[in-house]
Amino acid sequence: MIASNGNHTGTFARITTGNPQADFVLGGGLPSNSINIVMGEPGTGKTIFAEQLLFANAGGGRPIVYVSTLSEPMSKMVSYVQRFSYFDADRLGTDIQYEDIGPLLASDGRAALVPWLTELIKNVSPKIIIIDSFRAIHDLASSIPETRGMISELAGLLSAYDTTTLLLGEYTADDIQRYPEFAVSDSIIQLARQPRSTRDERFLRVLKLRGSSYREGQHAFVITDDGIQLFPRLVSPRVATTYTPRADRSSLGVAGLDAMLDGGVWAGTTTLLVGPTGSGKTTVAMHFALEGLAKNEPTLYVNFQENPAQLARSFSILGGDASAMKTGGLEFLYASPVELQIDSIVIGIFDRLKGGAIRRVVIDAVGDLATAAGDPQRLHDYLYSLVQHFAVSGVTSLLTFESGSSTPSGLDRSEQRFSYMSDNVLAISLGGEERTRRTIRVIKTRNSAHDPVVRQLDISAGGARVS
Image (cartoon, rainbow, N blue to C red; front, side, top):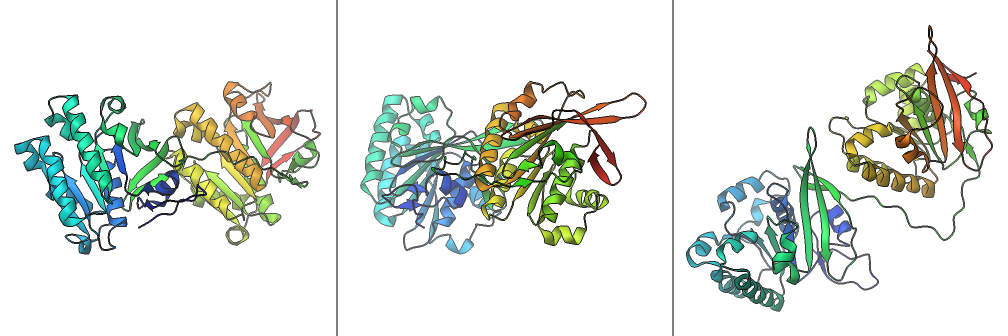
């Protein structure tokens, strides 16, 4: 299957990886008639990546050959691939051929590889050859120069025929400078796994791709029954040559709060709502969402603490009608904080924006994303890119952030990190000895007059209001 290249004015033939997102990262897929290395430690998903590509490209009159060297037994490899949805038993033996060269390498050494491949290409004429594991062949060589000669011979053979090759191996970053196959390869794809406290996260990274642009950086992925599901890293949108911001204001839906902001926030801006636990951030966020429903502005509510059923109950207490919310354009995007992966959530939000219908977004709360991201810089980059997409799309957003302080004197360092990318910053504080007293103040708002006075925020069974 040929994947088109949409990143260049000139195009050349590509083969699909079997994963549209991976093809997107690669600028359209892997170049045809190329030598490609897929590297990573054991268990990172190299074989699944290769076999997904294998079945996606099967057919068309020329077979694809999967060559096993000194890694897993062939019977085990075929047994495992049957568990994935892309497996097609009818392709085996004709369109897809599995070959085990391990016994030959064990008896004759690495010198047997090139003659064996030469006969294979002459007799079968495969359009794709996958060698797993190529790194294991290094163990058969007595020296690096000996391996270099074999690689040179192999590269000459593969380049002379109309075939695309994938070399899989348990390589490390240091091996890139040591081993000669990296110099002759046309692309290098790295798969990695990083342990978290309760789970692992997997990432794909393109280290090299000749003759093509590609999306740099780490792209998270998960392994499902359908194979690899990739979440391309979100980047900031290109700066538009002409940009006309929306000239209308959006109500936050809380009585008295719009008056503090000269009639509401500018449409298409981002508001950061900061406050300690129990200050009412979620209540204000739900008012903002219900106001969007009332103004016929489809709203996406992203939450990590309460599932949609729990949120629907909370919305009903504030006067929201369940059926009206469903038909009126209020969508929920929920992920458990235990299994939360920032890449899938951010890409999920971005995908919802592509249709152009969403006009408001609530993210409750940024702190949960911070925990999922692990790296503060990674969270910052994702949020900055996402906020820029909100602005370009004219989407009005509200982000809640749990503060470590109950005083409204200012923002701590972590809060300041997100405040500068927001157009408006509101802070809720808690006080009082015998009775909880909430106050709210406007820390900043861009291009707008605002009330500098600290006001009381009352929350009752009917919701929130500024008095």
